[in-house]
Length: 171
Image 1 (cartoon, rainbow, N blue to C red):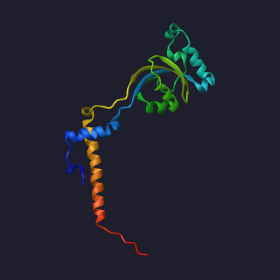
Image 2: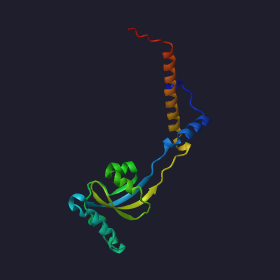
Image 3: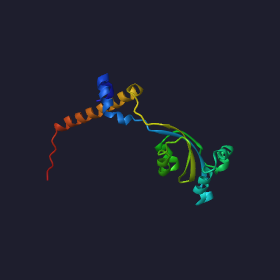
Image 4: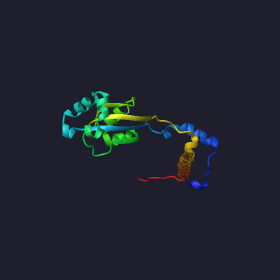
């Protein structure tokens, strides 16, 4: 049994497969953000307080200052575009990513603590999770359906072949 000998599903079969498995095609929510970093190593216990002190300043004062002059140098990048919660967790840790994905206001917020220190985060955009329409994943649906059918066919062939044999264990 191989894929080339199998019939491609018609639209009705594919629609049923899509409905039964649509959650597997969900696109993760994504966030775009920038941050000001306050080093835990450099500032110790003051990192979070220093971040909060800057956040508490009047808007006019914050507007005059470059974010890289306020915080500390960050070894990675400052701007993150369209990142999933898992991608953010890989860089900043799970607790940071959970807090970031709980934010709903597009503004400077925080401080949020990571494994590196404290961060003030400017949430720039939120792309909500969604399930794509069939047209957007048509080829992938067909591939996955065919792969699943192949597994079923191979299992059926194996069971059929196995039913023709009997194993006798002698003492």
